[in-house]
Length: 467
Image (cartoon, rainbow, N blue to C red; front, side):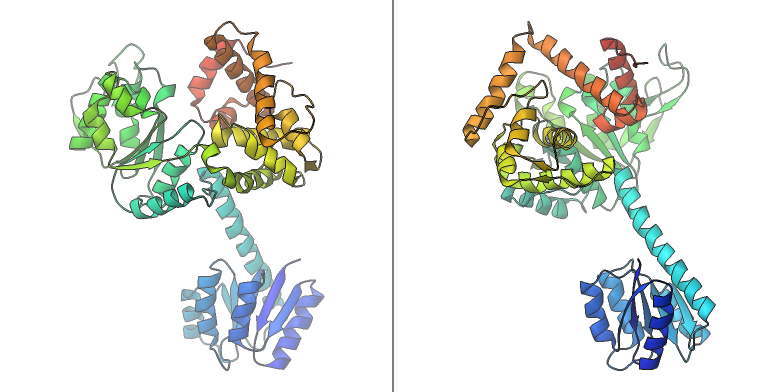
């Protein structure tokens, strides 16, 4: 049921409007002045406001202006007994959805209210869809390290400074990059992402700079590279530490001269790109080992943002876990589950080798496999997807140790590290494909790899869709 607020200093008008709207099954509240009306807007969750223009204490136009600051998407319908075209235009300029004259025509009033509510719903839905499509989630947590990251983003984002984001896999480096773009002056231009680790070294230059037709065997047509696609916007080079030395040299030139040349081409192309980079490697050690260029490192590392390991900010785990609970349950269309105190303590005790990404997967697993309330036993049982055991009551240290021992028993079945990695990767990809009904595009987007890379993994592991 839509909730409406009427602000008018004439009691008779308020009563008439309220009677009409309540008859149409709207939930209606009313107030006789703009000052109290603004307080109700701040505290209440109204879907639409009908506001008189000429009132004592505060003019209706002033109420409209202040309400736009408080709740910019709240539809306002202005009403007046002295309506003119100029007044209607002024109200529209200040953000009013529509304008009606006193005494209001019944049919026009109801149609205007219905249209205003529809518009409000569309605005809300559009914002939700844009946020989902952009994959930009809030940076959750209030620990000192996260507060410092948020503060740094606010300071650095509006500038053109290059940023090197460091941290372990799954810690949230990509999210930091997205917020740097969202809060920059380039936010209306594209954010182009390149995962340097997911692209074979022989193809990385073509991916970044594009190529001309016929420049190599499979170059059957001209291709625009990521630098050109990001022109005017932001280029995010993820896992920069895995880039080949030859590609590093070309990236360095692009940063120095703001020019690129396509593979097989001669023409220099000017590009206006802000580059953000991320890595889970120690680039200074990579430089010592001869795997990374020092001059490129200094070009990229104007500002450094280090994203801490999840175990370094365990006080943030309850906030992050609750957010994942709500989001995943909403995606699955099921009631939101709860984690009790002992269950949350058990989550905080785990080693989180996969950081926030692992926590997300863990919460998803608990939502699917647990009852309405997620307990300590659930966390211990499902900490190892290979099959946990009921290990009884334990301290936080024992919980972490028990999880480790369960894993250890499964490790004995693998001869070497590569076999284990292949097994884990195969099972992960298989699970995600089956979850998405073998929609390769959706799965690639969900696990954050290129579709072509996912196809090669499917072929490598011999995965086939079950009939």
